[in-house]
Image (cartoon, rainbow, N blue to C red; front, top):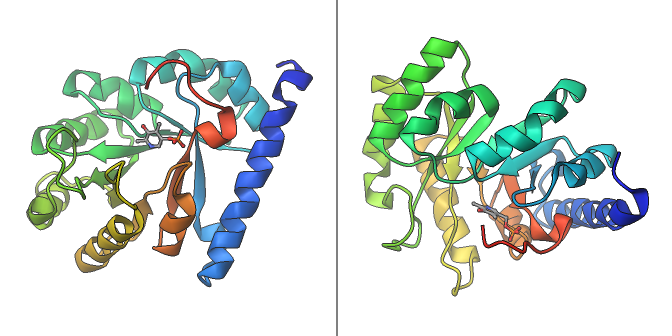
Length: 230
Ligand SMILES: *Cc1c(COP(=O)(O)O)cnc(C)c1O
């Protein structure tokens, strides 16, 4: 078990984030239960995850397959309610492990990956929920489908590959205010008839909830800052 004093702060941070989520939902007349808090534990040790579990957190996000595997394999056995989401880029050579490990994949961003995921889901008879990542700020250095390619990509995900696409995900440009990008992603989701929206991080999850986020990915405000850039 983690040292209780070391992680007492973590339970308090988690509680603060939960009440900010409730507040943001109520301001925009939304049900707070319609917002899933994905606690992003990347770079933090299993003991930190354990402390969050002890404080009632069930859903975790990791951005690397290998790291998630090391950290969560044991925790899964002792915490049957634990849910793990992949929020970072996925290489096709890691698809097998990703399908086995994760309950949701937020980074479906290209046809080759969609095809590989569909094959692997059939093979394992396991269907993690998929989010299509959209490059909402048209940033060349970022992954994600360009907004004008989204319709065609979603059609092929569903009809050609039979992927269980439940929503869209984005990471807006760092410099600008995120709210307009969140609204754009919500508009795209409405138009494409997908119901889930993975958007909002420590600095902007309230704006994301106001724009309709169903999944907010919060890391540093719960677990503290990351020493390694991730
Ligand atoms: C790291 C990360 C987060 C969490 O970011 P914080 O600012 O620490 O809350 C959310 N989404 C993605 C895709 C990330 O890589």
